[in-house]
Structure formats: structure tokens, C-alpha cells
Length: 325
Image 1 (spheres, helix red, strand yellow):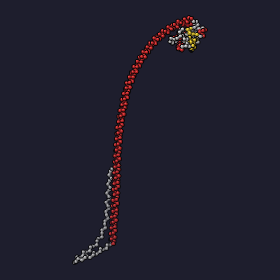
Image 2 (cartoon, helix red, strand yellow):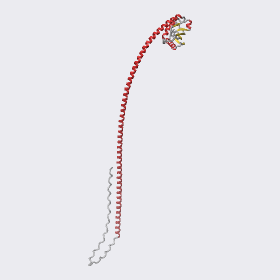
Image 3 (tube, rainbow, N blue to C red):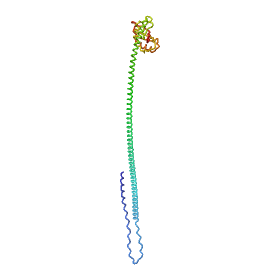
Image 4 (cartoon, rainbow, N blue to C red):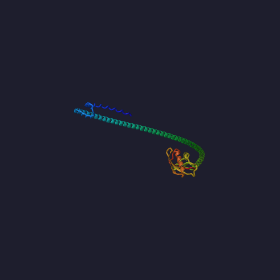
């Protein structure tokens, strides 16, 4: 803070007015001649009376001088008071400036303290954040390593399980293929035996049917195949050879195990169009063996067209199907 400029020096006091010269004293009387003998001196003569005019002027001059002295004293007192007031104001101003300087200094120090505190807090926060970041990085690294280890273990376990599963599946597949091969061989053998047995049974049925045909008139049939009855059979009847044709058409499509108890008879009414194509079929009498009934119906569906009898279509016709005669 700049120091206030020094106060200007007080102006010199005005020169005092010249004092009026006093009136000249009255002339001293001549010294008396020495008496021949000491005698008491006579009293001095009274001084002469001053001139009233001069006395008045002297008095006026004295009063004027007194007035000027009083004025000068008053001026000096006023000047001293002014100077004192000025010094007081200067001291107050200096004190105010000093107070402001001190306050400014305190503010500056407080600001510096706050700034230092702020820097300290920021440094603490930075160190804390750095420590937390390091801790978080270490945690993530530990998690990553644990995850990697767990994944490696899981992969190893999965590979072991996959290998074990593959080995088990390979073993199961080998066993299944072995079973399949054995079953195929068994089926092949069973099919061959069944085919052989079926051929033998078919030949036996054929021979029986031939004997039946020879003993029957007006009926057509086939051993283990079909026999025609009904209005058409009773009036004119199918020819003897038609039964063999029906047997040859339907019999290959009948799929049923050879082992069957008894000789159940399934009666099916069949209707055909002019070409011999089967248009409808109806089980009019069950054989009592539902499996045999269904085998007959499926065989007719698969056959689709029955042979004509010497160029004629006999419809409707009831066909009788038996496994064997």
C-alpha cells in the first residue's frame, strides 16, 4: 500500500503589524547642585500631563495592536486546530489504509490457505482414486484369472465329458450296430424260413383248392384266398378259372403271420366299375379275428383292380377269405 504523501507545510504566519512608537519621555530635570550639607532632596516635580489626543491615539494603537495580536492568536489557534484535524484525518486515513492492508493481507493468506487446502484435498482425492483404480484393476485381474482358470477347468471337464460321452456313444453305436446286424441276420433267417414255410403252405393250399374246385360246381375259390358267392354266383356263377385269377391277384398282397389258430372266414362285399377297379368294399361278416379281417381289407386296397371273368365284371360280389382250407 502506498504511503500517503506528507502534508504540506503550514504557511508562514503573517508578519506582525509594527508596534507604534511610544511617546518620548519627558526630559529629566537637571541634577541639583550638591548641597553644602546633606539635606533631604526635594520631591521630584510631577510629570507633565500627556496630550489627551496623543493618549487616545496611543490607546487606539494599543487596542488595534491587541486586536491584531488576538486575531493572530485566533488564526494561529485555528491553523493549529486545522493542522491537528488534518493530522488526525491523516492518521485516520493511515489507520484505515493500514487496516485495509491488514485485511487484504488476511484475505490473501486465507485465500492461500484455502488454495493449499484445496490442493491438498485434490491430491488426497487423486491418491484415493489412484488407489481405488489400482484396487479395481487388481480385482478385475483376479476375476479375469479366476474366470480364465474356471473356463479352462470347465473346458477340460467338458472335453473329458465329451470324450467319455463320445466313447459311450461309440460303444452304444457299436452295440446297436451289432444288435442291428444280429437282428437283421435273424430277420433275414426268419424271413427266409417264413418265405419257405409260406411257399409250402401256398402249395398246400393250391393243391387243396384244386381238389376243392374239382369237387365244387358253380363256385370259384382259392385255398387261403377267395371264394365268390351271391346272386351272380347263384344265377350263372363265375367260371372255374376266375377263382385262380382272383387268388393270383389278391393273395400276394395278404400280409399275415402263418401261425393262426383255426380257419377263420372273412366275407367282404366288393363293388367294381366296368374296368374291374374296386370302387368300394365292405366287411359283411367278420372272421372273428380282427387282424385277419384288416389284412384282407388292406390286400384289396393294394390290389385295386380284380381280373375280369371272360371279359365280364361280376359286381357286386361277395368274396370269402380264409387263411387255409
